[in-house]
Image 1 (tube, one colour):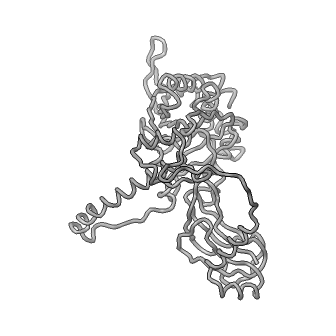
Image 2: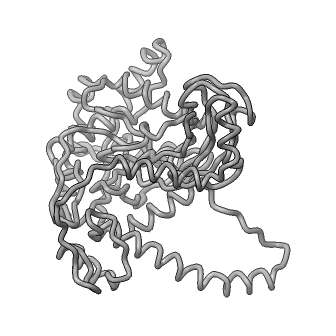
Image 3: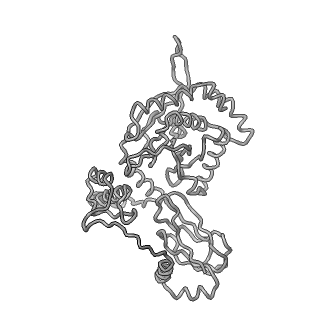
Length: 413
């Protein structure tokens, strides 16, 4: 008999919404057959059967399950009849006892802080002072209970949430009393809860923005020429693959933008791989899909992968692996058909985000003449702890150089 649990799928996910069972209680199932559909912060995942056998369902549909919770048992009918007499908690305790009996014993001595003393590095203590947090109130998740930067930030986010909740009833009570049935409460979906948490974390990043304009006349012409060729291959070609390739070229010349900041060690982690995140609108909220090793892919390959990821989003078939480990994110505001400039929010733990906007016909000066050309506005929001305004200007100028360079664009096309 095997116990089916909601396992840790990474990305800091601690709970999920059990949307529906794909089998019935007592049904015979095969190994690797999808049993249950669970919506997490990032995606909807199908969890398969660990072995072949009869499925005994434990968790209920439309409920919230935590990582480690028992979802079901799969095994022989006689085994399940015995298991059904035991509460899931007892089974869990039994598994914990068996696990502890198998754990290796060590005589290594561990340094433990004195009573009342928080176990944290100087950089974490500094962060706590900046945020006005008493470290004695924070639970450490690091080795031997050490308090990490994420522990402090999570505590701060929860503290702000509690403060908002305390203030909310006063506002909502007055609102509902005044307007009665003309107001409606709508619970946040798992995705919107994740977006809310990420936005709270992003607000702790000291960010700044740089904006500029790109002459996209040559880019427009090449896209117009290459579009029919791509369509013959069954691929819808857009500006975005060209922008992605030019962005990678700019990242290679300005490597501190393809990075993360380690607050605890006060170090910049430079990444020598290029996984480009693309912010994409989905029915249940904004998500970031990832083009892995985009520097090694052609324009056609990137266009095809973008279409496949978009199709998966629409069908709610996107996987967590297809939305993780991005090194730099691009948000294409122009694809929505409006907006001149915006200030996107950095996707933690990245250092910057690029927003590209609607390409418009605009009067441009060439030599002594004014001509109508295609203009592409962009905004670059960056972590000011890692890069400065001058760095952002250099990155922007590099991006402009490549997207206005006919030879570079011809090589891509």
